[in-house]
Amino acid sequence: MTQSTAKAASENEPLVLRTQSGAVATLTLNRPRQANALSEALLAQLQGALDAIAADSSVRVVVLAGAGKAFSAGHDLKEMRARADRAYHEWLFATCSRMMMAIARMGQPVIARVHGIATAAGCQLVAACDLAVAGESARFGTNGIDAGLFCTTPGVAVGRTVARKHALDLLLTGGFIDARRAEAIGLVSRTVADGELDATVRALAETIAAKSAAAIAQGKRAFHRQIEMPIEDAYRFAGRAMAEGMALEDAGEGIDSFIAKRPPSWKHR
Image 1 (cartoon, rainbow, N blue to C red):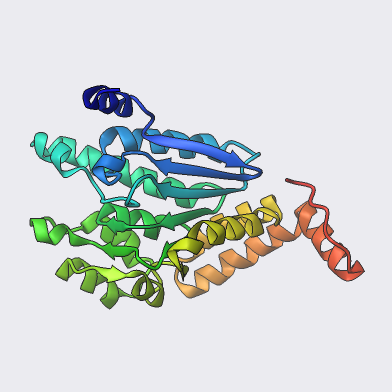
Image 2 (image 1 turned 120 degrees about the vertical axis):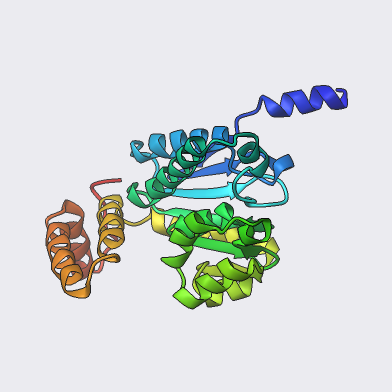
């Protein structure tokens, strides 16, 4: 195969690859030559994959990964620069925001498997996921400011994931932090040796997949709603959500199995 033929073949590959092992689906961003930059086409395919999984009861946990040497370098700046009109840019950022919000709204937990760099909207994507596991050589940044463009939309997810001053440190300086620092400020859940990344993500996903899917979905959605509320409203909402949770068949089964000291047999798998 010639170099040009190989390039053409790679351009015809899906920009998001989906695989599934048991109840765990993995979505892999597949633009390795472009460090998995979030082009218009990739965003559309990722949105479609997330929407399909949200409606698929066979999937209980989602892993989001990147092909090649990086998780994601953020928006495709060449594509953005090629279109100068403001209406297009507003549409593009709204499209990306819709995809980020879909992660929070779907019932299945989404785990970011982070290696290499996660920058700008790629860092936003890590922050938007429910959990994130990073290899120790991974690096994170919201470095749009270095190109004269403040990472305002990445700041929405990052600013809701880490403390305000940590978020602004990243946004204002454009500096990079390593995985250990990202874990310390709450951007990622766990940092592991690079060689242990896949095994750690798999074990975490399988642990969650073994729980009640109904309880996980109900609880995840409730968490994302209450976290933005004032505390009194959050407690009122959370109390109603827990009462709804108690009405689930799986809650009855789980409590009965705990009392009887036996493994639960979930009704909703």
